[in-house]
Length: 88
Figure (cartoon, rainbow, N blue to C red):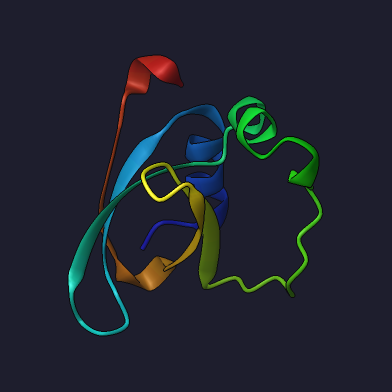
């Protein structure tokens, strides 16, 4: 599967659609990002670059653009990542 650092690098520069299998076995497509300028704009004062949870190398927290909330993706459950290469 994709290295966490590679996915973080993509999401810090672009929005992406990540298709993955949820813990319950269903497949989900989520539009997400980690673009700092966007997160500061949306979250305002509550945006904090310091993670509040212990770092887990097999899970990545991303900002869901449709639900406007933080969500976690297990890296080993990712099936596909789609993003606009011109935005990177």
